[in-house]
Length: 291
Image (cartoon, rainbow, N blue to C red):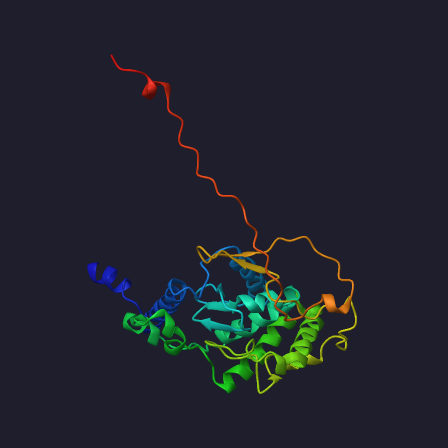
């Protein structure tokens, strides 16, 4: 009887491998968070999680662990996956024009997870996390080989075609066309530090098959919004690195210049007067004189 109960607690080789990969994933996420590159779990993650769940449910994806999402606090347009955690940069969330475009970039990383393009368990060893914050980019990397990127693109389009976003892929095509047209001017924005770039040598290669979707790009059309400016969706609290969705009143676009795709917008800090909290009221019992 004791032998059976002891055996039941032993991990199978596959289970042990998955637990080791989970350890690697947790180590990386914790290190990026403590290093100030990853926002703590919060408001924006829930928005990303909703989109991911839409893709997972409609495609009947069954994984050993749920897929999580986190926000990288940098501006370069970047995504990568660590185990079952999808990471997307704040800058990329900012410039994507709609939910379908967000679904497209998340679908690419979800495809890597579904296809088993795991980067291994080398980060499960805690000593690999012993480096300074300044050297994070030199010690961590989550890039895939070209063959895996091609396979992930193909799978991502399959996932999108089976999702609620299938009828809105034209918006994704417009975004990619706008990005392609400005790629040579956005070298810094397209230079990634941890994941694969959206393109190379001025050519956008990520989800390239979707470039033909949608109408022709016409920057003179006021009602055609292919991409948004930086800083328009996500705000970061500088004291604790939390990321939140910006809740601003929509402003009417009156000319083509108002669209500002991929541009850096002016920053106006919102200041409030700080006042010390009121001290707790003294009770009558405490303030009364003794005998």
